[in-house]
Structure formats: structure tokens, C-alpha cells
Length: 96
Image (cartoon, rainbow, N blue to C red; front, side, top):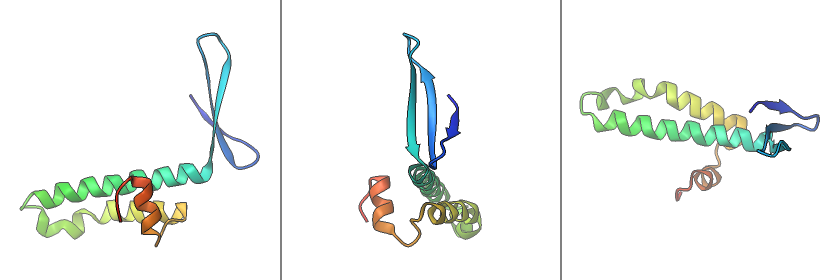
């Protein structure tokens, strides 16, 4: 399935059912940005756990996590979630 942009700023994704009828799923770009932000934060969380679990890499955590932190920060800013931890935690399904 491929995404295309609709004129009103939404993204649409199309596919065909078994009977041949075309089905289109529409998502708001804000939802896509929030999804990317949530995924980036989950990747940061996984990377943090991995780095801190190994006593050999834990002292270098700041250096090793710089990339995932920058990715998460950028994704949060793009989604309008920077500084809004409560909403972010709700998207991730965790308590603040």
C-alpha cells in the first residue's frame, strides 16, 4: 500500500479487498507525526535500557544515546509534543 497526500493536508492509503472494492484509509498528518514521535521515544527507551544494562557501556551512556535523543527531540518538536510529557506518556501508554 502506498501513501498519497490529499489536498486538505491528510494522507490516504489505498488497498483492494478480496471482492475488488477499493478501500482508502485516511489519517491526519498530525497523527502521523505523533506516531513517529512515539516510535522515536520507544526506540530511545529501548536504547537506554540496553546501554544501562551493560556495565561496560553505562559510563558512556551520554555519548551512545546522543543520536536516539536527538531523533526523539526532533520528532517531538515536529509533532508539537515538546514540553508536553503528559500527552506523550498517554500516547505511549505509560504513566507520567
